[in-house]
Length: 145
Image (cartoon, rainbow, N blue to C red; front, top):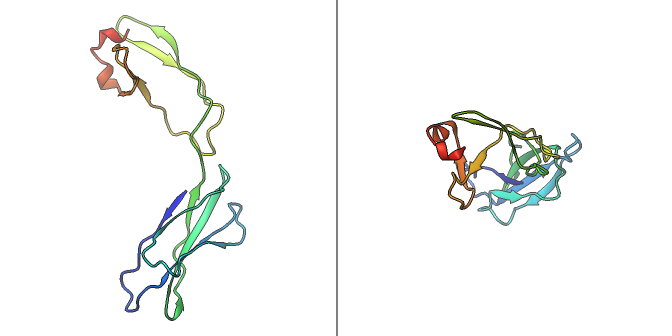
């Protein structure tokens, strides 16, 4: 998971860097996951080793010659990976000018709620199935049946 934060632009003193803190995803203590005291231009960090489905909390501190600044606001993010185990859709019904597809839920939601599905088609071309289907595109396309 990439974590980004804004650089401090209002300080009268040069920022020496940023320190990123994270909890364990279970509400436990925070620990340092990135210490950028020698890299003030770095305002992002790739956090790895997260467990899908856990909500991780983060905050950042800037450091200048006087020491640590205030903690940023805490940001929370759910760790997840793409859903997996989705079988091909099936043709459920065919009518004169439309058809209905059906599919089962994937075997794994990847740790995050599934918010929707997208259907792709080759629109009868026999080529790559890479065109997103939406209702406006489907209307008046008899070769889809």
